[in-house]
Length: 157
Image (tube, rainbow, N blue to C red; front, side, top):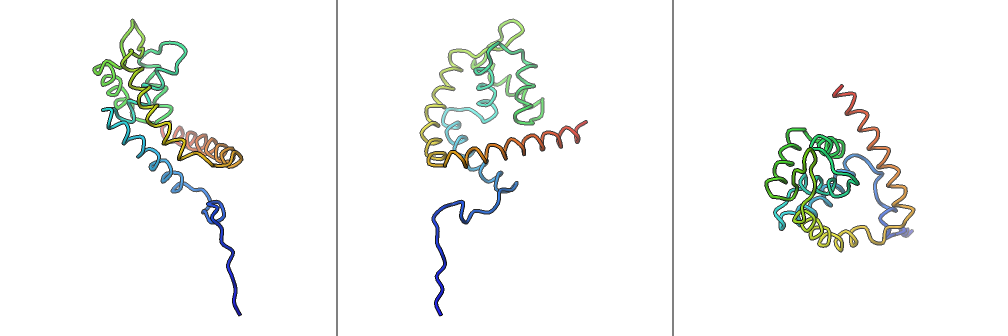
């Protein structure tokens, strides 16, 4: 008797259920791509995240406001974030404007160059994933982020 196994090329047909390891592997794979691009521009991941936050803000942020925003996103040590702010100021990618920090033209240009270089790679990575899969993944990631944030808050309270 011969049996034939159904074969599928769909990643969802054979993919394991999402878990912390899978999330970490996806994060580090994508971050590895970004880190490769950032290195060519002499920037670090934390610098890029901080510069993005400064550029995305509707109002100029104080150093403490920017630090809190980055700490909320990256869960990084405040002293490391302050060092990143100092690096961005030293590289003249951010400038102090009274009590606030604002991106310089060089900071805007660097961020635009990195974004332009990453965009086609990102499109290849994310392209072709069905919208309903992205929506489901988005819901799961939002819930995991919320729960992990609550757990971290309870550990540091």
